[in-house]
Image (cartoon, rainbow, N blue to C red):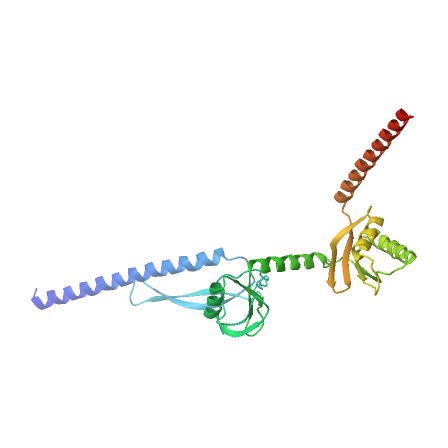
Length: 288
């Protein structure tokens, strides 16, 4: 055999070896992709799907042939699930987590400092040992306020009280308003009306206006009303001054647990009073 023939056979062998190596590698890749594809398909949650084909050419051991596979790719027609609305963050310090570059800043006294870069706002916060609180995120630019820890605490209490006083969905709230100079008969009529609403488990908002030349304590009037309906009602929102010369409170029906506690307390009180009366009676009999 001549050297030329040997060289030709050697070249054919090398070519065949390279082709086989490429075929093996293609087969491994095909298996890996198929596993990855069908594994993802099986783990998906059942949804309405429309399948659209895509084509893959798979190598055949015979380099002169190839096999075409028609595979499918899932196309989901189900509506995308709506993400839950972002919950409003609780009122308080945002620390140094400020996603906006430009802010409108208000100082601790409620005065506007204008728009500034967040780096400048953080610098002011550090210099005066204050905290930044987000007031209005939807404004352009968002409004932040520099506040002390005490100011934040007081504002949180106010908001909690306001939320507590707001009627819950499905709860009816009635309102009564009168002057601190109200006549005794009129006050009794108002109190009876309140008692009827409380019996229906309504919330009752009572507003009292300070009459001119009247020295009547509005808070004493609130307590007087509550004493009249104390077997059923309690304060939802305690009496407070809403503005100059005007005070308000909200009454509600007591829960079963509160009623039991109230009845137990009244029973103990009556027992103590009766015991004291008996002791006074015995003491009087001894002195006679």
